[in-house]
Amino acid sequence: MKIEVIRQVFTFVILCMVQVLVLNHVNLFGCATPLLYVYFIMSFRRDYPKWGVMLWSFCLGLCVDVFSNTPGVAASSATFLGFVQPYIFSLFVQRDSPDDMRPGIRSLGMAKYLYFTLICVLVFNILFFTLESFSFFNWQQWLMNIGGSTVLTVLLILVIENVRKG
Image (cartoon, rainbow, N blue to C red; front, side, top):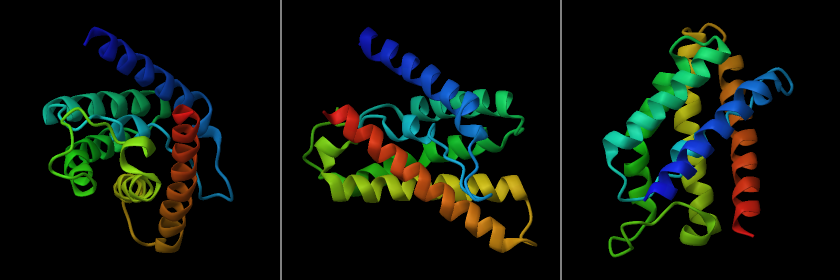
């Protein structure tokens, strides 16, 4: 159990640093910014307490907010994803599957994991970019930000998951 907590803290710190130091400065075509820290929120096992998922998600979002100068946007989006992640994950697993099951390509299969990742990232990005723009006057840019960031983030998550798998 202690090894799992150490692994979570290590993943938390690495993803936060990568997001703040590298990925926040990537802006492809003016609309696609990878938000890789969503991967941390998505990777909680099935039997993890819901309050724990939300607490970790809030702390990660708060760390990203502090270092990215986005007051409350990442924290609220991450907390919401932490709230819905167990419910989204339960859509893709069978009832008789093990309680300690983690979302991944090995456990879900490629197609289910792709859909799970796509739904989680899309939910996060819709809330994130809605709170960031806080208006619908430039809805084309809003849609391009959501679409571009979703595609880029899903691709990065799939690459990481395939590397981790091997």
